[in-house]
Length: 126
Image (tube, rainbow, N blue to C red; front, side, top):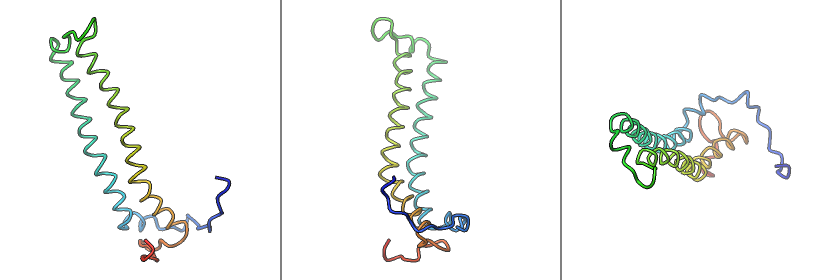
């Protein structure tokens, strides 16, 4: 934070963000993000709607005791909460490993001026 060397200032108001968005680097970032988010979102929605449909139409199944006064409905409900935390943890790990390096590459290129007109001007260093 305070120990970092100051960067050469680029006037961010002059950056052509449309060109950045249409660049191959940004498209790769977007494709990488979507290749994780859409399948996981689909699986989570199926899991959620299955739970809701079971709770709505399968009363006997959901009220089946597991132990004591805990039934399958309660176990599946808690599994929904656990799934939320698990997917969040998984996404953070994925983003740190895959998305953040790509975003940093684009950001650094914009800030140091090597990214202009929708491409990096110094391609051999990338």
